[in-house]
Amino acid sequence: MNPFIKFSLCLLVFFQLYATSFAFEHENSEVHFLEYDPNVIQNNRFKKKPYFLLFAAQWCHWCHVFNEKTLTDEKVISYLNENFVNVFIDADINTSAYQKYKAKGVPFTVFLNPDTSEYYKYSGTLYAEPFLEVIQDVIQNVKQGKTVDGEKIFAFEYNPPTKFNKSTLDNMRNTYIKGVLDNFDTEEYGVGNGIKTILPETFLYLIKSTKGENRQDSVLWISETLKKAIEKIYDPVEGGFFRFAETGDWQVPHYEKMAGL
Image (tube, rainbow, N blue to C red; front, side, top):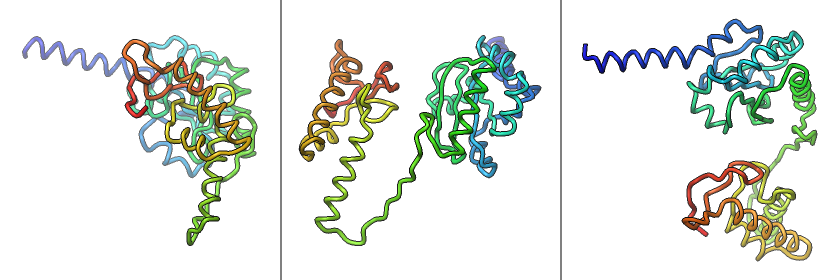
């Protein structure tokens, strides 16, 4: 056999064994972990439980700490097994899942509601006692239909009109404006608490269409958002704005440019 091919095959076997070794470690865990595959979450919706997704890797020191110090605690084990669908995700193997949930580092924890919508996520290790408090809070809020901030989740219902008239159009316009204004981040600015970006058409529409107090709020929030954007996602070297910031505090620019500004 060609020496180069032989060497390549050895490397392939080595990396496969290396990449999967941490996943095997969880086979002996008392936490009832499901191994991740693209259908595992949808296939377990019938359990009507929230999901605990754990991203980890063999080379990660704090993943081992979390496994050895937290996931061996009897109260944690019992609570997870009774109340959650627990899914282990090897970050080295399941890179698509890592990107899908916008994981940042390992260990990375994602909690999903029973309907598979995202509840909360964070990176890093918690020891047994604080982690137990976190998962207890998750269950309590999920059962009460609340967000991670303890706010009540209200189902959004929309009944499409059977015909259009001026009143219908006015109601649609007002509902849209209220929805945008209600979702401005009053601390970090921008719309929403997730990724942050500039929304030119939306911002121009607010300025043109709002009146009174709504107009004052629109001008203030848009101005502050643009200040943040210039500070955080404008490229002072090459010019132009990056598409968005990947965190709610504008700290991680997504390094692709926008041409629509």
